[in-house]
Amino acid sequence: MTKVGETVLEIDLRALEHNYHYLRSKINPETKFLGVVKAFAYGSDSIAIAKKLESLGAEYLAVAYTSEGVALRNAGIKLPILVLHAQEVSFATMIENCLEPSLYSRAIFSSFLKMAKDLGQRDYPVHLKFNTGLNRLGLGEKDIDFILASLEGVDQIKISSLFSHLAASEDLNERNFTISQIEQFEKISSAVLSKLKYRPKRHMLNTSGIINYPEAQYDMVRSGIGLYGYGNEAAEDEKLIPVATLKTIISQIHRIEPNESVGYNRAFVSNTSKVTATLPLGHADGIGRQYGNRIGQVCVHGKLAPIIGNVCMDMIMVDITGIDCKEGDEVIVFGQEQSAQDLASSAKTITYELLTGISQRVKRVYID
Ligand SMILES: *Cc1c(COP(=O)(O)O)cnc(C)c1O
Image (cartoon, rainbow, N blue to C red; front, side, top):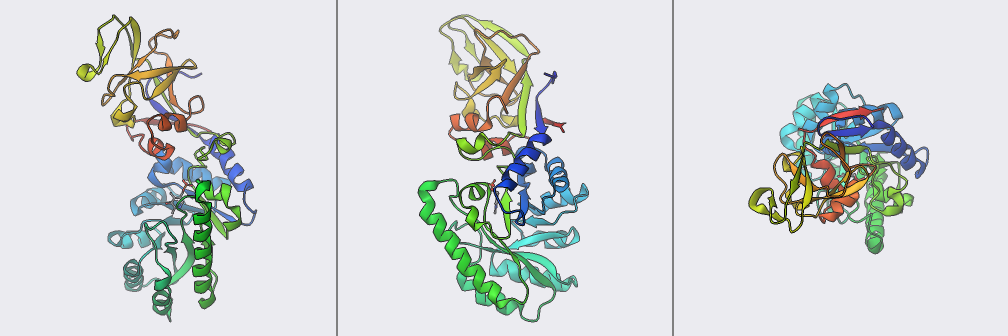
């Protein structure tokens, strides 16, 4: 084990490669693969991840916001990049950087078309997003005629894809609802396709969609969490490898006596003699207050040590009573030893939130 000396997020690009091949094995060879790298590639590093996905042969990338796509272009990423939550203020920047908007309302569609005309674009690739039940972003069936009429005689933009997003692909109790979303998408997308002289791609599945509804893979799938090693269910987690490992070290060890307290507001008061370790990461690094007071645990030499007292901004204290360790030793907060899924669920949240919350203060290191 290499000594890290400080808090680091280790990013294992070999794990990414494994997960990519595993997810691809679930779909037809001709189905395209879009890697979702929004939110710093789920809290890891969007540039390192995007470069690796590009080298592995992924056909598309997606980010949530324009600034995330600009960062990828500045780093030399050449793949087409879909911006899932395109906003009018950044349309000019998008076009300058060859970023492709998701157009999800009549207003957004019309204003992007106007921008493409003003900037003299030709066949600029755009994506039409349809709402089939998530009720978050998306055009509806009632907007189809408007969109088709607006496209008459237009050569400034070209519809690259039609897509929708599932609300509960990981929850098999919602199977009927998901099937109705797929049927709704089939109906809407077929109506649009039948009126166009060219054939945009269609896509609908996120990671759990790939696993549970491969019959709806259409021409492309969009995976995020699976690439990072989590499958939203135990059987899939076993097949995937976590890409990110949050490691830290023991800065100081204290022996405390009965009735002594640990941390701010004396939230932990010991009734026995204990040994505590102070670790250099806190809520400013993404380990929120909800993990304090024995909710979350970290892994010290393979043994779980609960977080005691309140989480501080830059530190946590853990109970290492009975664990053989010393100052400077390595501690795993989450990763391949204790999964981010386990830590997140201890605090009643989801892997997505824990991963994306790891702040930019934490140094990223890479294994390839
Ligand atoms: C974030 C996102 C995804 C990826 O979802 P995962 O569950 O992480 O695979 C796919 N599509 C859209 C529209 C998204 O916003």
